[in-house]
Length: 370
Ligand code: ACO
Image (cartoon, rainbow, N blue to C red; front, side):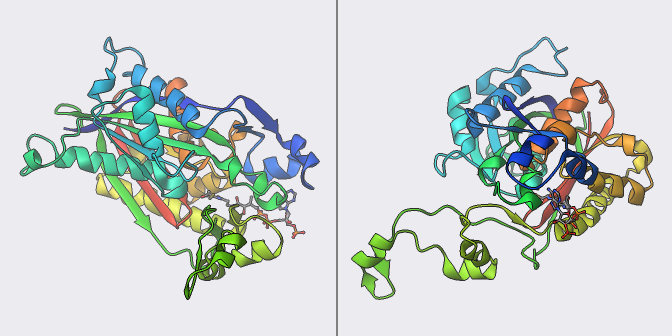
């Protein structure tokens, strides 16, 4: 028994931007971007909101039960939980998951967002699985918990809204999109066999972005101050300093853009990805020989190649979807998973590893039987 992925879907925004088009913004070229990252183009949400993308991906996942072969469709009332992993919600409140709950008519669902950057979808699956397992009929104390038999886990991002389009080190990397999966508790199928999620400090401030607090605060250290209100958002000076965001402000750039030390993230990511795959497989008592497909976070093809080499497995064990999406943060794993199902490379009974790393630093992997 366990929670099984029974549906999967994805949505990309309409506008596709090729590498060479970015020459209009920064000093770059297709050759540099494609050889360093594997990215050829990315999608940019212009008219679509984050919740538009998430809604399409979620509807696809709800209607795609067991690859579309199952006769049943899920009724919206059958979903008990919605987790939306995102760092770019449309609004702070209601949550992105709350917006989805309303749009899809998921009237029985608990809904909340989760921020674990690019690892968000993997964290979301691990959390949904834990909630489902804790409420399983055979578990002591289950009656006292929220029953969760079916969960919708979504990763949705409009990362291009946090992108500094004058910084060639970052702007060539990111894209928008959404992916979704439906999990169902089953007494027969094993489903998720193990999960491993972990954090370490980003001591190098390798990946940062300030929050958007724009309301003027009519106070200074002595109390109410109309001067402070007139000055607008003072930012969070000590946090800005701690995260070196002050440097961006000094450069005249907005505080709320992604700043990344690529080589430091690359080093963390390569180590974290192999460690997470190994740890999750160990917990499931499996080896790489048992695995039919690894679906990794699509940040950089070179990171995936490095992981394949370090693990001693062929690159074609990994689902590669980065070429026409770029790095779409929390959306990247579920979108790549949808690609893997669509191409038929995941079959019922296969062992699959989902693995991600991201800002925070966060990383993790989930192993499941399809
Ligand atoms: N076009 C042309 N040249 C460029 C570009 C560009 N777009 N960007 C950088 N360069 C130049 C640099 O200025 C540098 O030039 P210099 O040697 O004259 O100074 C040169 O190319 C090499 O730069 P590096 O940073 O050393 O290039 P590297 O091989 O490390 O690749 C990259 C950079 C692609 C960013 C890589 O480090 C990487 O993929 N890092 C990981 C990113 C990642 O995984 N992020 C995931 C988390 S994102 C999130 O959580 C939201």
